[in-house]
Length: 509
Image (cartoon, rainbow, N blue to C red; front, side, top):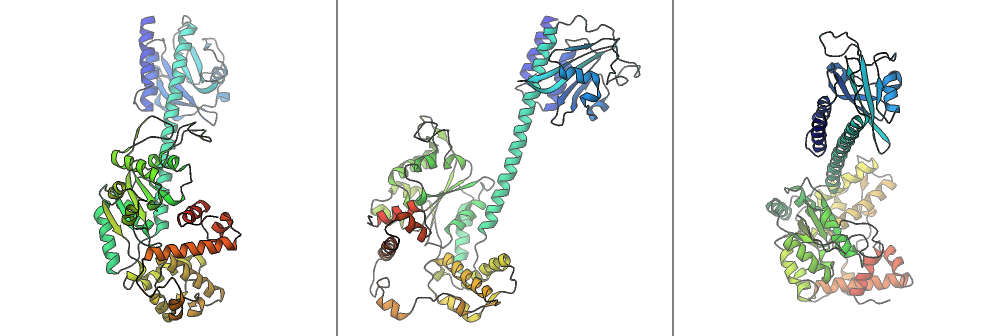
């Protein structure tokens, strides 16, 4: 008996780490019990959250039992079993009704049970289930040592807990996957579509389709407001990684001192405030896409570490000496000319060449032939839907005026301008957006002649933009008493981002 029991217990222990499905593990458990204990019928129950004992495996009993649930207080023997931490015996003279009388698979199916034993299954003080054994032989369980049934019960309880945890993890994983897929779909719908039928937009779509299915790094360039992030989402959506996340990183807004941790993660105790291990953006994007927006703003020290990850697919969390492997597709975007940044020593040449495997240039609004009317219609549809004004439209003269503008802020500027005009029209209870609903557009010849930002002779555009940025930041700082946080709020910017921009432009206050 002892040798046989050791063998059975070993098999049960091995089943704890097997890949068998739960029903087979349950059945193996009570079949193994039949090799050790002299029963004619047995049942394994799990204790559910509602307080019921639900049979999950039976032997020697009608399979109809598996379709039932037993409330212990309605079945005195089961109630006595779950209330005891030790095995409970019921002899042939016990007056308590047996829940399995008449359902044993014997030649005489109406024969009553004569001997019964049961034990509760506890793990860490928590009831997880119960085991019962029934015999037609009087005194069948008289000589079973308590330690034998207690050992078996402990392994049975561990099996139930193990299966329960695995099932809970599977359920949670399925739920998380469903949530993730839903969020990905919502993110894509929020980003919308690339609107426009110009030759420039046709070429843009062709470029995206060409590179999307590969794992090549993509560098998206274009002026502010042209829709570089929308292009990045389109690349990811058409890639083979579209069922995995695309993680967004604004390189210009990475907090000083924590930028490396944000990208590569850290381990507990790596620095003050690191109270737990934390995965970085690269780990979160493993298997998917990492979108590095405003990549030209990355500090040089981070550029070197970024290059290592791109080249070798290997990173180290801050404070760790272990190397982690990641499989990430890099999509980067910038409104800077990185070639000029390389020449100025602000951007690593080797990183630039790694990112610039397949460059995609997003055309400016002024270069998109005939797209403004289409875009205006698309953008106005959002306003109609949001404010429930289905009859709102734009006057032909106003649309012509929009087509004549240079739009230095591109699609973003057009959207904001059109939205403001639409809200003014709605406020006036007018269904037509007219010229009077638009801001005064400063493009007159007098302004061009007098403004330093519209030079009469050839001049570097980047220098002009930086001059405007420098003057604007200085003006706002004077207006806000030299307080950077107030200046950032005035300009609707992140304080750290504004401060770094001012420092780069030579503003020290």
